[in-house]
Length: 268
Image (cartoon, rainbow, N blue to C red; front, top):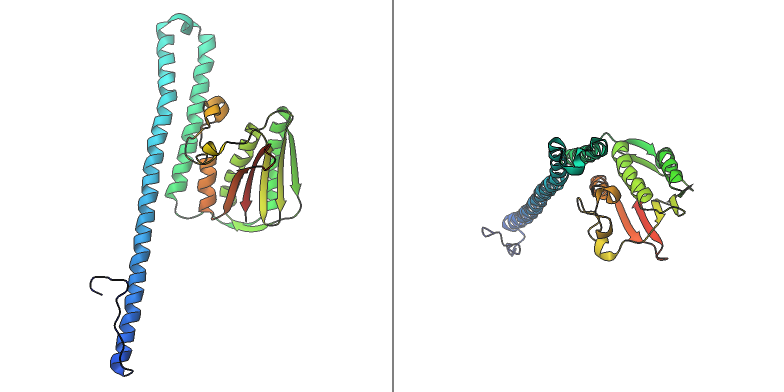
């Protein structure tokens, strides 16, 4: 027992006071071993979480460096009046686009930092998932219409939840935006509630397995869409993954069996 051998125990050979004492010591030792094992698991989880935060900050620093360097070089060339950079009417709007891109990225990074530092959920409340989805889909319907995308909402039943509405809405917003961004004109997006599941299906080119396994990593963008104009900043699904894990909700993101789209499901 002094060596913390998990199989150690006192052999009980009597049913008198000594036997009862031996049994109490055995139970106490099993409780102690269990507590030590639990603490070791918690220690590993904390170490893993800390490493994930460090990795995120390292990748974030690298991602921010690229547009900052681009902006600095463009402005320097504009100040010196070098070649085409002397045309302020062309390059000032481009500089503004980079600044807006940086602003959005910084906002998402700060949002992620708050999620990682906050060990508890936002204020939880009773909500109707059907009502939340109905309200959230309206602006995305308008965006879809401008891109000639058919946006269908099918809410067969409702699901009552006691959850952080703010966090859930943030995750759903990223899922819906991702669907709209990666659906071509003339295709369909379907949002539905069935049983205890919410599904968002969008008709698109399915994500290959080699990319799908990395899709929830921070700043990851598929090779065929790694620029910020078409591929976003690579934080959307990472934020979704972080929030849904924080809310302890199971989810799946997978290609349709018909090979004509992707489906994101959340189990409540």
